Image (cartoon, rainbow, N blue to C red; front, top):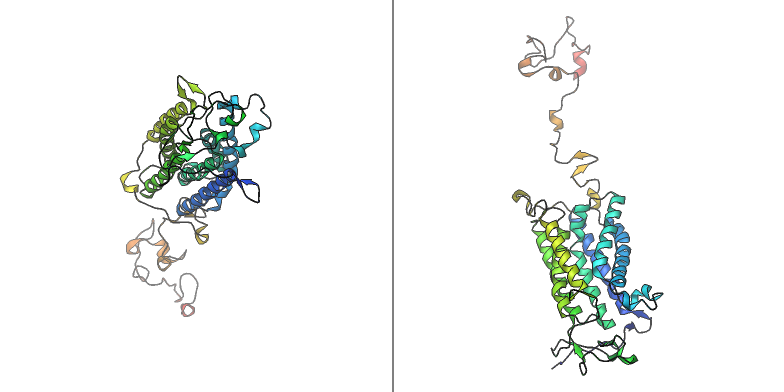
Length: 360
């Protein structure tokens, strides 16, 4: 029986010198973009617009994640900040900062491309925890973000140089073990990854029922993610700054949950009953002319179609007569016109000057 999960033999992909950590983040981004594209198409929009947004949101998110990590763990970089603060391949991305600046980048891109933000956020929000779940697996290869010592079968073995130190120095460089004799630890990165997968499934299911009002999927994601982050932080035991005895990320999670709940319920949570379960027509190249309101070239697609068999030529008798042969704004007419015939002049010609024989 497996007593613990083995640590990786290397954090690099053999032969190409690329870190698994970066690869997992890239795979997470690709998976999220793919899911968001499908959801945006199902919402009746061009899926290529998602890629346009991602070109902005992903770099913004990476910068935000790195800034958050460096600011909240500045002690790690204080003695030699450069180039260490730029070495993101060694780990150190704070998700709260990534979410904040990633959303900022996405909103700026949506404004630039004139795309509706609430609908776009609804399509992209469920894909975010999917990217996070895949990216979290990169922490396994870096042997980081684990919890306290554990003897559970799924505990992960951590190499000496990555184990917690009581004096802040790596154990292979004179550090004092925080937990002497402990070799396996809680895989908190795995717990968070599984929680994120659950959040992804929950958000997709909620959206499939069309229960929430437009624009509510993003705050729903915020509440779902940080609720999980809250209990995962309680299991972590790596270095972290604390405020009133709680880790900074714990306080941030509490604040984000509060903001998410207010955002979620502000202005109403659920759609009107008659709108629930109603799905738009998926986007195809053929209906690309349709705009988001179901109109073609600015005209409403819901407008009643014109029956050409009932159209009336301008200037005809029917066009100027009302019901029962009464001219619009004039007296009732007698004779052939009132009976549905063609008014004729004294010479037997049509009143409009056209020979009756030419009408055949």
